[in-house]
Length: 211
Image (cartoon, rainbow, N blue to C red):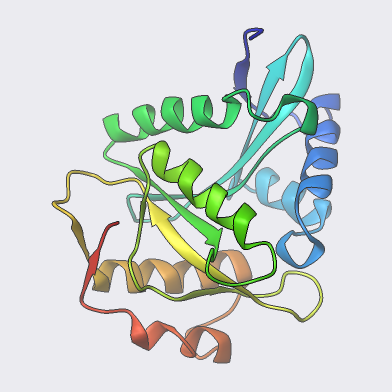
């Protein structure tokens, strides 16, 4: 495979940013993505980080990350590869390279992933979960998570996955509960009294198995 270079986008006037937004809009359903103007604002204000994968001078991959303030967690908000370059291991390379950097800083990834036990595209969802597990991430067992609608009114049933930081098969449920509330607050502007958040936050147990 042709060599790929991952770079962080800081200049939003670059053509690379425009192409990244095109990939983003094509890769995710409307209710699971923000408007490009929201992404632009978050990057400009330093809340979010955008990485692109360049192959033969062309943007073929994007990843958007949100460092959660005061925690060891970095939310992998979105990741996508253009259709013609899928199944070439680009996503795996990014996760492995980035996870190595994070581990050295005692940081870790957390992901919102479509629940493979729900929805009409269950085969695709199971494949996605398997992909992340092959790359070292673990599912938080029996943790229900709901992605609020970003456009429209339809929420999405999700699971949460994290990259382990030396735990022996379990993580502290109180930590996860606080991180979930922080994600809702920082990314979705929904407080602790939000009905959707309240519908599942209380079911998070004190100890959570990693599977």
